[in-house]
Image: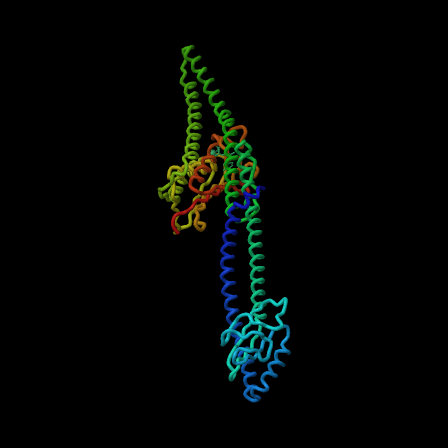
Amino acid sequence: MDRGDILSGAAFSAVLRSAVAFVVVLLLFGWVTITSVNQSLIAELGDDVHQRWDIVAAEHAIDGDAQIAATISTLSRVASGGHHAAALFGAEGAFIAGNIMTRPASEGLQVGPLDHAAAATGAVTQEYIYVAARLGENLLVVGERLDLLYRTKILLFRTLTLSGFLIVLTMLSVGYYLSSKSLRRLRDIETALSKTSEGDTAVRISDRGGSTQIDRIARQMNLHFDRLSRMIATTRNTAAAAAHDLKSPLGRAYLSLGRAMERVEQGEDPTEAMSDTQVELERMRVIFDSYLQLSRIETSGDAPLIARVDLRSLTAELVETFALIAEDEGQSLSFAAEAGSDYGVTGDAQMLQQLVVNLLQNAVTHGSMGNRIAVRLERDGPALRFTVADTGPGIPAASMERVFEPFFRLDPSRSKPGNGLGLALVRAIVEKHQGRVALRDNRPGLIVEVMLPAIGP
Ligand SMILES: Nc1ncnc2c1ncn2[C@@H]1O[C@H](COP(=O)(O)OP(=O)(O)O)[C@@H](O)[C@H]1O
Ligand SMILES: [Mg+2]
């Protein structure tokens, strides 16, 4: 994978921006921390130095000038490695005793370098904090080198720098990893797209079950590919099946027309043969009509359906009509809808009517004597469930998907009326209404379940 692509990926650049923000915050935080540590340590050390100055001054009060020089000499000798500083200077600034060779220029508590006799090599600093104040005629200087302060500051600085560095490094690695991961997914998508554009409809993007935007897009595209390959397969099958199904009535129409002409030539009545022709032509017209209707629904795009249709009264009316036909065939037809529920859907009344008709017609035509057809309408949360169950021959599980293809019929002898477009239309209408349709085994018989989004509570 190209490193440039990974580095310019969304994940990496987001992490990079956060890393920059983090560094800025860390710098500010470091500055504030080090400054406040500096201030409080200086205050503490200042107190220490003052105290020591006071002790020497107290001794001076007791022992007087004679003893003070000796005390300072002892004190400054004890002090190791130039860490402590103590000295006494005369009125004219002349050195009397101690380990500071030059008198500080001014008096008071100060921070700065001192001319120490044992200036240590390798010390972290040459800065002292010291008090220079008058003791009678003389000037007493007591101080301490700022080792602790500098060590603390260096330690703080190192800790902050190191942890900041590690955090930024981790962030950038994570960003790099995420970016390369999403880039890999994008590559998968790119490959799948280019393969489909070359005509390979079996290709899918591997689903890793993730929930990132890319994963969701990949899943959406797979659904799209599914639909596309189904459409291509259906179109291929449909063209062949349509030709096949139109061939028989066309052939029969041709024959009966020939018969009619013969009758005319022989001076006989051609009416019967003519009406045979008419029946076959009518059959072809119905096929064309249904097929046109199907393609109109499938290609009508996403024009919104706005009418409010009461599915219960629509179904009740059609059930009433079909109950008579069923009765004639020795079958029974019942309709049940739970009272009090709202069965309104947003849709196209004519299409929904067609849907119910096709399902009722299938149940009656494909069933035989004694068939019990039960139509139910019920609410299922935000959806409407419409089911047509019969006790007829049913559909083997292996064919439950195929019966939705245009012109597909189970009965190879074509003994029952129909053109194989009924369920294809049902599916197209259901999908147009943002619903779904499923077939189940009624043991014996078939259950067709249609789910549609309902209006209202
Ligand atoms: N209720 C049913 N019981 C048994 N078989 C059915 C039923 N409904 C549909 N089928 C089978 O599914 C095929 C496709 O149905 P459909 O698309 O409506 O076409 P047809 O015009 O043949 O009814 C039918 O030919 C039939 O074999
Ligand atoms: Mg049918």
